[in-house]
Length: 252
Length: 241
Image 1 (tube, helix red, strand yellow):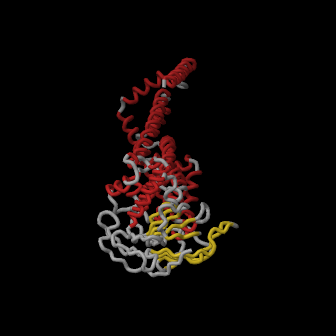
Image 2 (cartoon, rainbow over the protein chains, first blue to last red):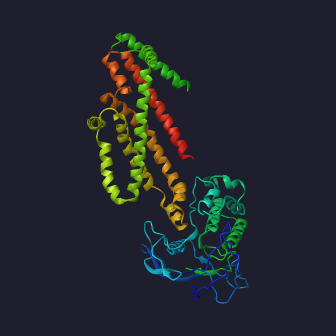
Image 3 (tube, rainbow over the protein chains, first blue to last red):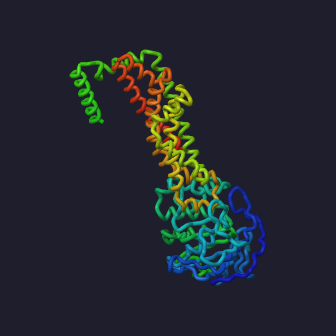
């Protein structure tokens, strides 16, 4: 369990151009708190009075945050500021927790606070409390569209060129113009990762982003995620810790 | 393909033999006689005017009925009150026999545009129910994903809703044109607007010209086939943009 009881410090904006077309980010400081969350499915208790804080400034005074990259200086044992890894064996509730944080599911007890405000779980057409770039467990891509469009459709300010560049860092050229339904599982996963990273969202929530990827692709994908993160809050759920040892671990 | 031609040739032969057997041009005219009558028909300007007028009216009814059907389906999908009010009405449209509608429309609106109205009324429920079903079966997990990413309405429509709606609308467009055409022509036969296919059909009956009757029927069937094919092609093209 993690408790990071530090209020977010206003970050310098610098030349923090996060998204293409020179759009500068606002203050990316963010804090999400899951408080006393309990969730049951029938008799099975998935989350039991779970509490955790996710904050872009996760450690007091530790790790200097460099404006522009958002990466903490990593010394040994110094967690990367704002990067969280939720570990648990499959089925233990990682996805459920993420869904609750995103506002897609209502817990049986407890609440979620986003930047101090209590999140509700809206039904119907109201806005979800969190604007997040998400990789879901199932890819949830637009099957009949090519990879490039699967990225540009989710960010109005992103040009085709920028989407292509992003995709090319993880995928072979031929995969770009082909329909997503024709790509392999590993390639689809990477498209989903690029989509989440290049969106204008204020948080990145990735559920098993490396599923179906071989070692090399996994490393490249993780590097890409960290590169595109630009200081945003990053929450990854994975049953493997490899490569993310410097993330703040949240164990269910 | 060859087999189809042979089968067609077989039935044409049977038809011709039957007509020779019956030996009564009032009762049965063979394919040869029909083609002869058709030749006489297409030489007349009135024939072409009638065909064009009927086509425009029926196609207009098809288009208007489709647009309204889709529109009502969208409204029903988003607004419960609208659905509760409109759906029973559309159900009535679906169940009332076409003949009753034809008589009603003749009383209300005269015979000029009867085929337009009947086509509209016949097509509307088809598009309505198909579109409704399509809209309610859009993948929830994709809509969830769009909500999380705060996808724009337009993008949502284009990338998620419309692709999933496509098979439903295509399905509707595979039966709607034929229904519109048949009901429209039937309306014309009953209503007898001047210079229409229905009118032409009826006149050949009055003149005891069975050959011409068959020729008109052939024209109706051919147009029906072409109508369906062309519209389906057009809709497919439209949805593949």
